[in-house]
Image (tube, rainbow, N blue to C red; front, side, top):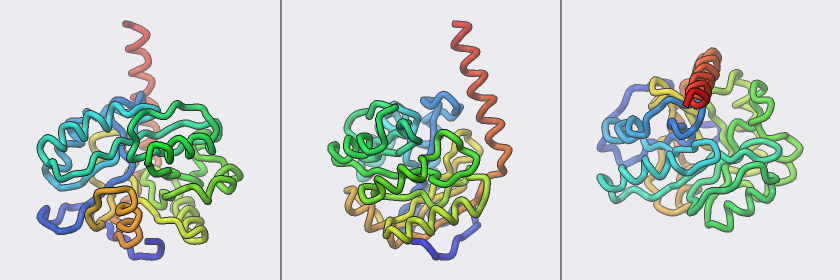
Length: 242
């Protein structure tokens, strides 16, 4: 997918299109820094046919809630349970999981556990200069790249275009498919980014679909991270009051 033209039109097209619109990085309020009700992610698919990979921090709860509701109404959709897992050297997204992966393991062990479940390992925002702890360390990525399945080449919350470009160039150099992620933590970020791709059911079919996908991408203003910090602080304070 690297090198394809990027559409900047965020308006929905015909929902009866034979292609899927897949945003491969979305958070719900099951992440401590997000305020998005999972029902809003379901509504996004219902209204615009944008399917979201729900990647809450260190939990499957959000994706279980969203895909439970989605598949009761749209049983043809695959069950894609996913989690953004903090390792000892940065974050890795596991998708097509059957159970949660514990955080703070090594990156290599985390990838092995994902694969043992039949899932795929996706590296989110690998070269984002803003993310000091959540972006995986470059030396560690080099060590595990042969076992990585997908590189996130378009992350809407990455502050600099050149950071996303570096991710796509790295993916191309290592012959890895590229994903598109809004990294949405709030309702108004939903639906802004996705990959238009062929329908899929299995992990192998998804990898093939990514290789032929068309990115729809709109980067958020960097100030969005301030809102996320505010949400996280408010939620933490409420927990302390309980």
